Image (cartoon, rainbow, N blue to C red; front, side, top):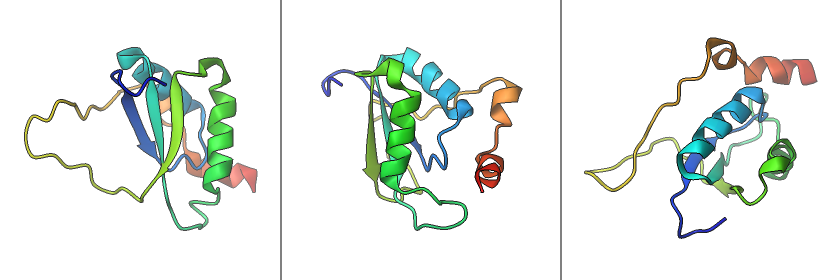
Length: 113
């Protein structure tokens, strides 16, 4: 990744990174050409069974055809994204098709057990 170029952000737990996340990644990638995927640091639980290194490995495997266009980093347990005025970036919701929107990481985790 080129740190000087415009970059889009994806922030989440990715427990696990699934096809819905992949479709979202592709839409976001269209905006800037590169994406920084931020993995929230979460205490291990039934809803967060995967450690950062496993999450990163799964994401990198799923995005193997996009090498150089993304980076996966671990961040604090970010719960609020705040700004005070026009700061040069947007917070934007990407609406995906209904069949993608209804993919459930909880259902995927339950099937993995």
